[in-house]
Amino acid sequence: MSNLFVFDLDNTLVSTTHDYADPILEMCRKIIQVLDEKAPHVSQIVAMEQEIDRRRVREVNPDTGKPYFYSMERFPGSLVETYNQICRRVGESPVLAVQDELYRIGLGAFDGKRYGKNLKSGVLEVIEFLRARDDVLFLLTNGDGRVQERKMAALNARGIRFDGVRIVDDGEKRESHFLEITREFPNCLGRFSVGDSYESDIAPAIAVGFYGVWLPVETWDVIGRIEEVRKAVDRNQCRELSSLRDLMLIYEELIKKQRGGRR
View 1 (cartoon, rainbow, N blue to C red):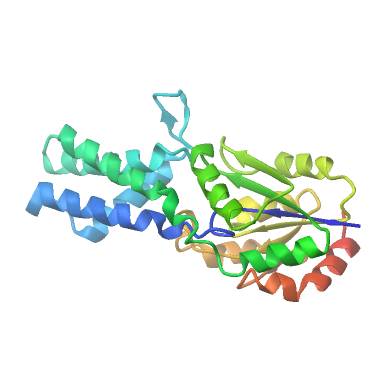
View 2 (spheres, rainbow, N blue to C red; view 1 turned 135 degrees about the vertical axis):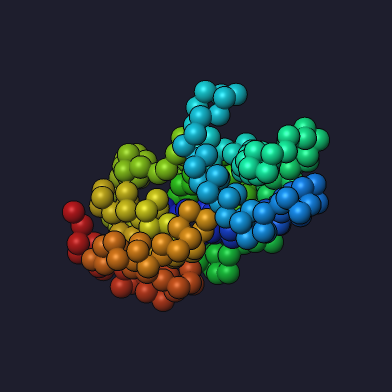
């Protein structure tokens, strides 16, 4: 019988962590340019942006009345809010033209041209390996559909396709998402969730009978917390790998382990 592999997208199949680096650095340059000696040190500006962007995930977007979550508007707005907050601290009035420029800079993080170049090493090999074994491949990703569809288009251009796709646009992945996928493919004997975030991709899947394949990446929301997360890993139901290619090396071992420990 086939096995079901549910893949995450960002930083699992496509590297996206550094998509935000250039806009953040450009924001720093712009703020320093317009505020001159009143601007904080660049390290402080970056730290402020990180804190603001993390907080805004749960804040309500006044244009939609819903939380920003991982919508396309959150990150550019965080650059603008960083500038606004610095202006308040130093007694300057924010300039509309600067705000508009910072928002434009932030949108640069979603340039679709980069996604094809940022395909993670080994992705095509692993997908072909699983296809050759008649396994079912599902893509479960959280984010803004407008952005995620560009990344999926980059995968499709390389011949990487899935038996099902779901974009979670209302926050984090939940146990219910994995249960729904299980019901969609009831004949799959082994069930695996593959992703870079233990808290989002692995833990909710383990809770409903999946086996986790964790490929840790220190993204913006877990900076400095990787070791803390490692301590929470259920080692009986999850395997940590350093490379996606390693999935092929331990495939048979995973199948035996997961089928033997089904809940």
